[in-house]
Structures are given as structure tokens and as C-alpha cells.
Length: 259
Image (cartoon, rainbow, N blue to C red; front, side, top):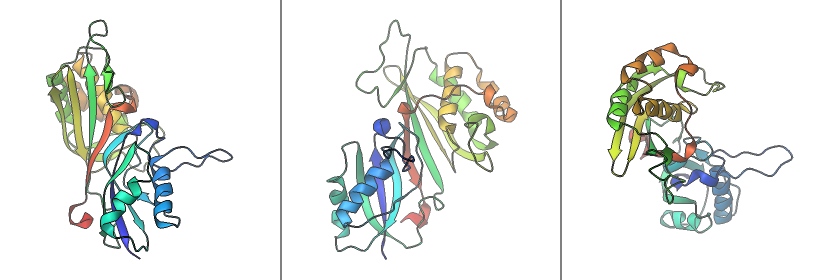
């Protein structure tokens, strides 16, 4: 049976994350996997089970989510993306559909992932919270120094135990992860973004790192404190978990296995 790979983008505001959720005795929650499987069932006229690469949380966005499914169909592969999009709501879109090798696993074959956290900032008495990009950008009411934040961000690069930067009930066997790159990029008009990539991420890890970098940017923490916070493995030492609206899944790298 042919296996298909999808590249998917979505605005996560009105989704309860990627993963399908079926509460007992209640209506299913609106998730990206759920609406995608509904659309696929209409296109192929059969139930389709989709496996996604990243279980993005409620409100988190994606420019490049990856999913796979198996299906026998007479529909030409060049028409599949448009056929699915015709049946999807306007906050999710299939960017590409292709046939992939039978053994492709979007979860275990992922080599690395990249995320971006978008921030607008400024004194609330002088600068307004973003209006038109409010669903896609976090607003900090503090003056921030992106240069200090970038200096602090470098300390996250490498293999570390990120126990201080994960939700308490994360359920993972290990909290050791490798960060390949982490940087803060200053934009115009009091905006900046945190770009981070690595071999894997823990629950809320990027949003906790972003919250901690904001504390550096406003002068509450020094950049040199980051290594000691990491070494503490104490969630209370890191900062608050920022809300989801600023977070984007930007890309997933599979090397040769994903082509």
C-alpha cells in the first residue's frame, strides 16, 4: 500500500494542538490531526489514520509540520494536496503531498527540528500590543535588549539536561537533549525572534527557554546565569512558560530518509 508524506501549515489559535483528542462522553476537541483525518476520509472515501511528526500544543502554529499515512487511491499524487485543501478549514493547509518509501516514520526518522518564538516588546504606556499579528506574536510589556538575550541564548547550545526547562509532569524517560543552535534576532519596530533547533524538545521547553531569555532581556537575569540554571535541573530556577501564540514549528529535517 502506498505511503504518503504531507507538509502541513496551520495557525494554531483555534486548535487544541496537533494530536487528536476524544474525551469520554464529550464531543471531540478540535485538533489539526482531527480535521485533517476528516478531510482525508472525504477525499479517499475511507477512514485514514495520520501520523504526525510533532505534537504541537494548544495554540502553537506550524509552517512545516510533517505527517504520513497509507492509502490505496486512483487520485494522481499531483492532485492530492489541492483535493485535501478543498475540504480543510481556512486555518490549516497542506503545502505538499508526495509518495514516500514504505518505512518512512515522521517521528523516529526526524533528525532535528527548528522552532521560532516571535516577540514584540515595549513599555505598555508608550507602545501598543500588536493588533493584526496578535495571534502570532507574544507581547512583552518590558523594554528588552535582544543583544543580551542573544548572548544568553548561546549557553543553551550543546547537550544538556533540560530538567529546569520542562513541564513538571512531562512523562519522558530522559530530559537530556542536544541544542544545535539558539539565537535571538533583533527585528525592526521593537520586535525580535528566538530561533532554536535541536534533536528534540521537551514539553513546553521552547516556551520556558523563551520566558527565561525575556528575563535576561529586561535585566532581571544576567546572561552568565544560564549555565547555572541549566545545571540546577530545577524548574523553579527558570522563568515562566510563555503563552503559545508566539511559537512556530518552522522545519523538520529528515536527511535522506525523508526524500
